[in-house]
Length: 386
Image (cartoon, rainbow, N blue to C red):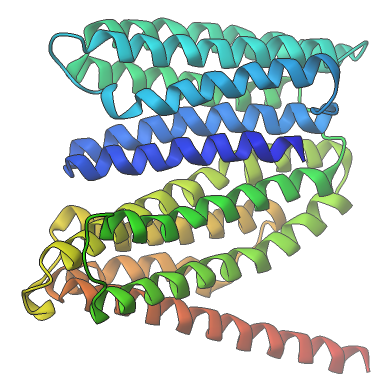
């Protein structure tokens, strides 16, 4: 249960990313938000591995994880200010970088201590520590310089950091003790992240909105339906992936966990946050321009890309998750994100509420189609066994 506190702090940070992108929706802002999302994702996933190696709710590990949570909380607080320029802009960037370094140093120290006498795991941690420390150089320099240089250096830093764990896995390996606990952690954090789409409804409407109109109510219900569909689509793959994780050989299990969970779940999280951002922008338009005809309220390109493109990214991550787990993906799952991207120009031309309705209808149809395919496959298997 203690791990849920870490998840809640992590999701609070995700809400701050959505808030940052909503303040100034531009292509650059979306890229900046993606980098911060990757930084937060690395902060979360490394502790998911630590919690699988040892109990995270007792003794030294609990104390260290609590300090790490405080550091992630500080990161969340300064997120809206880390890309600003001008006087006073350096301090929030340095706070984020230093807090992130604290998160990573505590993790490496606790993991090395939890490894005990396991020489393989200690070797893996030392390899990972090298790439992690190397990534701090462009991270600090980016914070000092700011602007475009910051964007480029932070992208390089997080690429080094993220790929370092994969390299360490290939060269030495991260042993996985409890497959069921590991898969449950990722399912739970995705559920909580999907809740950000629902939170964005309230954020978009705003506390100052004097009335809740019928278009707003309809948009809220469509958002709820879309969120339920997205989790339903994930849950089916999660069951198959967990079975593969539990039954595969130990050597492949460790690599499968790193690829299918730690890597493939990032587009799921990022797509969820982009969707939440698109919903927030739509609800803000409906709430603040309530006197206008809803047929005239079209989304700008950036919110439309976030709404539909973010969902496509989620579906692409879902297909990658299944493919990396069982090395086989149904054609429907491969085509779904492509078809959704083809609908993006349509969503841009339609009124915003209609675009959200189109997205929801697509997801409902996708859930229904996959359910029919699943039942037919199950019936075929039963006939063969009869």
